Image 1 (tube, one colour):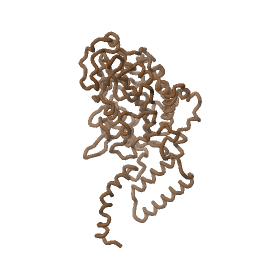
Image 2: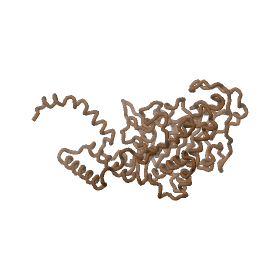
Image 3: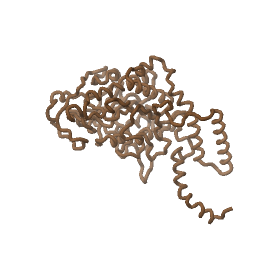
Length: 464
């Protein structure tokens, strides 16, 4: 037996690390002894249950997709008659460049869509096209972080993390926040789906394109043996509880083990799309001769299967094409066409499938990049980054369908009417999910943080 002085002397080094070990354990599984991902009540009645974020990494050009500008044709090759922002990445000159694509009106709402998106154009009556998005960050990584976390630096929780922190998820077999790898990640890397200072239970789980989407998920022993171990751990925990009192960290860790155990069956079942009808597989263009389209189509189908099973937030990034992302500083005509061709039919298929299954009205679908692009040319056939006026669209989940909201100036450079900041978009999405963006906070480093920082408002004109 050691006396108190001997114990403190021999274990002094370990005591220094003890708080860090306990903190790491709490962060990994949730510190309150309950399932960190258990469903929690919203602040108010929710219109939506899930979000699917179709993040178009690189910055698709608004004036070449959903925001046509006839003035670009009129002034093509001439000087841009606007004061340009100094907050751009490259000094590209002042020459106006018209769009290489043709625009037409579609649907009963008459929305303008370029010929880059013939399939999505058929769904415009379900889209809420926001043409007046803006923020002030011009480089990819920081703009990526703003789009995901509301802050232009890494280390803050992503939107998916905030939602699972606030609401939990409605499945015990799968993670609450899933990221579907489509061949290339965002410029911000893994922090784009990280939980930041929130407990690690709320970070996104990456599903790779490999045969086994999650590392080390495949069981190394029989289900019966694993179940026996879990039951033994539970009995030991009950014994410890009776003898020494409860320990919420042990309870939470067991819950995490149980979820992982159930995922060993649920994930292979999720990934096996052989039970889907041929018509559904064609709808998502999984049979396309274009391998990028087939890949993205399968991932969009998985997104539907995930929200169908109660996953709270699903994110997809675009597949890798020869043009490499939507970041066309040159050869925009071909680059944007390649990127659009890889995602157009699968996205339209996703919207149709969600709608016919009655899931679109409870699922927010968000499409967009970290910014748009400039009306003046970089070289002869490219465009620079433009966060001052760009386009995203939403569908379902209580967003008002069949509208084109807000506008940029005549050249598509700056948002001028009904401007919507990223914080406003985040606040509106949270509102539709039943969350008051000013009340969903987490204290870190002596202050309360939230997704919208100290900004943002719900935009009522966007609501159905």
